[in-house]
Length: 181
Ligand code: FES
Ligand code: FES
Image (cartoon, rainbow, N blue to C red; front, side, top):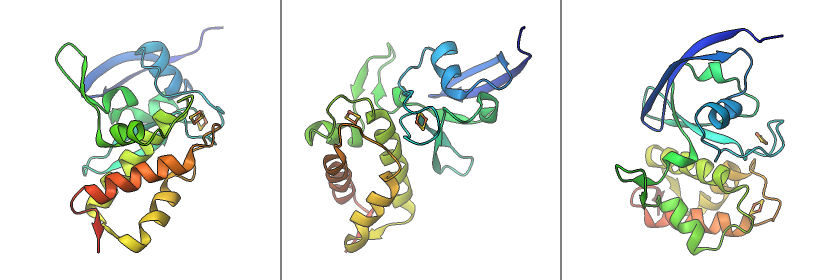
C-alpha cells in the first residue's frame, strides 16, 4: 500500500527546500536523512527521550528553539526555518567548513565527547541556550544550574556530561553579555 503524500516546503540551513511530496506521518528525522541526505541528527532512542536527534527551529521573532525530529512529523516543519547540525559551522561557497561555532570549538577543546554520537544534540541544545542567554542573561551564581537544566534532557551514553557542561560554561563566560556579575 502506498502512503498518501502531501507537499511541503521549508528552509533548511538557509536553503529553500520544496515543494516536495512527502508521505504523511513521515518523521522529520527520516525526511532529513532520506530526502536531504542530512544525517547529523542522530537516531538514538527514537522515542523522544535522548535528544540526539534535535534541530534548531528559527522562530519568526528571531529566537531559537530546539525540536526533536524522531517524534515530530516532517509536515510540522512546513514553512519554518530549520538549522541542522550541518548548518551550525560557517562554510564557504563550496560547502567546506571554515569556522566551527564557539560551542563546537569548546567541545573539542574540552574533550567533551568520546564516541560523539550524542554530540550533535548537545551542540544544538547549547546553541539554543546561548541564544537565550543573549536576551536573558543570568548571574554567574546561577549559570551552572541554568546550563544543567538546559542540557539535562540530553543523554550521553559515554557519560561525558561534566565536560560538556564545562565547555558551555566557558563559552557563556567568554561571550560578552550572557552572564551578569
Ligand atoms: S532519537 Fe529523538 S529523542 Fe532520542
Ligand atoms: S560521547 Fe558517546 S554517547 Fe555521548
